[in-house]
Image (cartoon, rainbow, N blue to C red; front, side, top):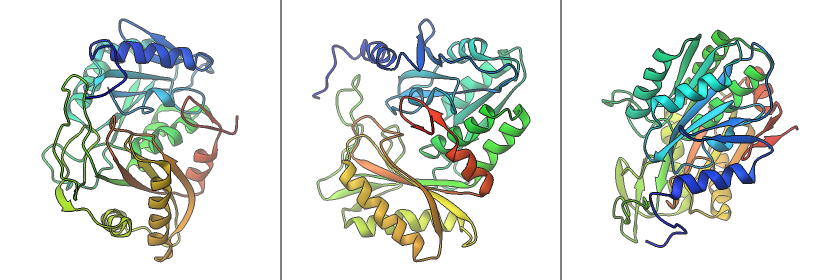
Length: 329
């Protein structure tokens, strides 16, 4: 294992300190317990959006704290859920009279700990569960995982909350976006968790792992490595079969890197995915390409498609100013 670290035990604390220093115009880091919150004050009655999860997926979620997105994010240890006391402290710090909306990726630890925090919280609150990973069947024992589509939910709901939408509206909006979003990923290599010191699974030089999660989990199938065109055809076909987008509806296409894939390759994947849907008459009106929901140093990517309408386009286009996503400000 070759990484820029002092020790596996100190990595998260030191990384969060560096993140807070680099973006001290946007966020503040709270310690004991850890959470990141936005600096800019919000209007009384604004719904407070809080998300979080295990570290190792940066910039998700801490990189999306700021105007137009999250009020706070709770980082757990690498690939480990944050604790209920982190979520409770974050909620109490940023709640401003409009209640709290938790945006939660569907992983057992995240779901359980956010539920505990919600029960302990002494204000109105609700939860949006994101489960956009269509590599797993809907009947899977723990449900589908929340992956890169989480960013889409956070951005659109964040814009609504910023404009004054109430808790019930933000909750319903988040559920609607989550239901209209599907993702699937592929990996060419595993990732190495510093505390483990070796790849989480082995994959041959002529193999790829189709349908991986973002915690170093194996995919649903190990396949022979093939061309980018065939890889995109496989991913996009599964997503298309799930969403069945109507030609009359605009869509957002997001190609996300897992941490070790060059932008040159990610833009190639976007080009091929756009061709796939354009040939089917689908109108791609918004795009996002880059490393946004990573898996440490995994080589690979995911494709996400979100079905939009005029309201969702407006909310996506609304100003945002965070460490990792910003426009219109």
